[in-house]
Image 1: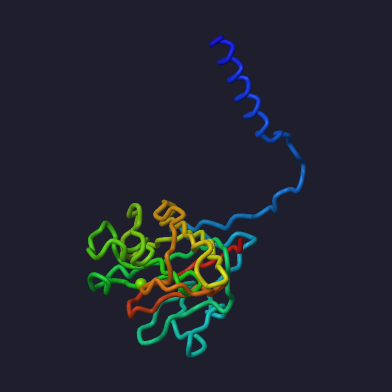
Image 2: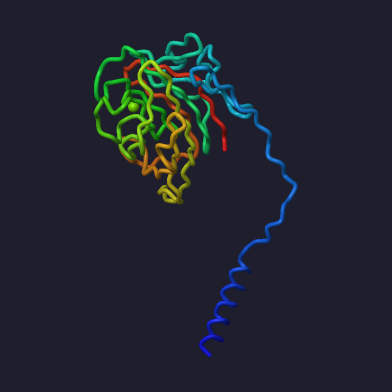
Length: 243
Ligand code: MG
């Protein structure tokens, strides 16, 4: 009797398990959109793939603006650079969910320490900062959720794969925009996945609110903002794919 019951139970479990598995047939359409990847330069730069929006054409900052109007950052030889005494810059276009690629480099002769050493930042929707700071090899000690690869004051980077000053670093970012309840609270929080030089440093991290004050801003879209913290930081190869 025991054996019979056990056999019956097994059959029941198996049949109900099978019933929940979808039929795994192949199908022929729709075909995925064909995308041509960007080119990789000898120093590791990655240009925009064919379906991306380029946010820097190598010649001017026509995709960007600032609170005072046209940005006054320096553009030279396919690179743009934070200029002291000017403002943050942000894209004219606004975005919701996206994949972002951006490369940055600190000068080889960089000076300063702590949060004063090569500080800048990349803000999703103008609100959520991924920190840019010269913290190669953990040589420049500061609070760990404020070093490069951190979601500023919310999440430390999982590892530190930075290259040294004078060499290019890259961020590849996947951003999932928040959704909101009728009373303005998050229905789903913003989420960030970040790679530094192709290495995962933030894995679908939950964002609790805007950088610094953790406030919830009821915004569905926003610009990419680059912070002017008074430090010289070079940027190039900035492109975005809307998801
Ligand atoms: Mg910063």
